[in-house]
Image 1 (cartoon, rainbow, N blue to C red):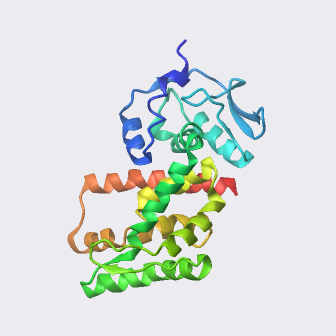
Image 2 (cartoon, helix red, strand yellow):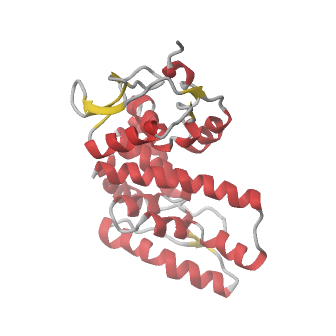
Length: 261
């Protein structure tokens, strides 16, 4: 009988969360080979997901174990929801946790620094100069988050019009980094990195992580420009589906982060 860990290894381990999701949806699926899904205490601490009493392992053969029972139960429910086949595209929480265990844990600093790079070119710092309605909407939705970063983190970012690069003060990036340290675990960074890449904003990711924004609010803020265009010019089915797929990834990342609290 083929080992599910081998069948899913390529599908669950790409380093880029968005690209990984695209690859996973193209991978062949495997037949469900287990009957019972459960959760048990893991060796070394935490909680492991079990298939017919055997611990699930990641593509890199590490135990699929997480710190909280709530998250373990969410993962178990995802595995139990697979019926005749095991479809990685329907397992976004497992994808994120595998990425954290097999990827982020190996080089946390690289992921931490990548989030900081996003902060240096954050979506919320680049504003339209027209039309007036879009400018006002950006101000209404983005300014409270920028102000929160300044007052709560001490991270004072400079705003710019247009797309010409604006160098951010080192003090702002350092202050942001101090806030990010609260999430400097493999799972915490995997979630915030996923949210950052999906929204284009490290500020939105940290605002969600710290409870300043809900997942819906962060997603809405990330799509101010896109929603403006849709309202005036419409959209198409392909673009709509791409956004829905990304929203599923966003929900998975926020669910994992919530389950760690």
